[in-house]
Length: 115
Length: 110
Image 1: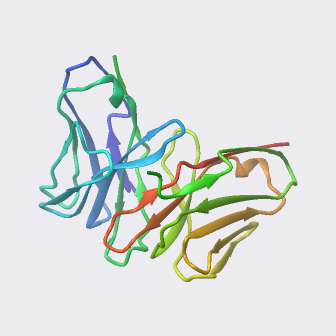
Image 2: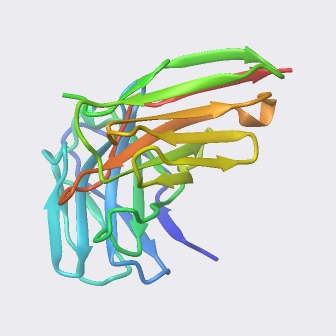
Image 3: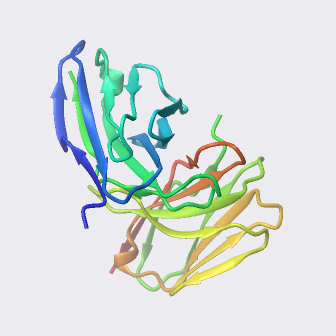
């Protein structure tokens, strides 16, 4: 079972560069989300999607774009990387958030360093 | 503003000891979840509590949801080195996405 797959696992960028973190899930989950995890800060929600074609902002959306053209994929784009975006990024999916009790399935994370 | 406050932030204990981790808020939550994360991996769900006063047990782990649905606790009995990890509480409020506390890092030494 693949579950939630994130690529790349590690990436080093220079300030100002752009890149896309890929996330794919094979569980036919409607809900997908992106979190960043920084030391002592827990997980903070960047963007989320409740279905194909629908996205919304989380707590810390600035500097990031998302799109949801298919149920399976939810890429996160960094438009112009900044050192403050150095973090570990997690993609997570859930069958449905409508009941607000759905289990989130996480990928293994993508560690990004911006120099 | 951090809606979910976890305490303690760090906990280092010996094998066999008991411990409790707290997750508190001034807001009411529809449900609360507890996740455990090991280094280099994503969080994995341990339990979901949805009813005020609810108590759930998972082997040596006991989870409680406060009567007013504003707080939760995780109690581990006779901790083992395999319990080492980051414990995260996460809450849903009606109409919003899941938010996480900052986590409690637990280290159990043998």
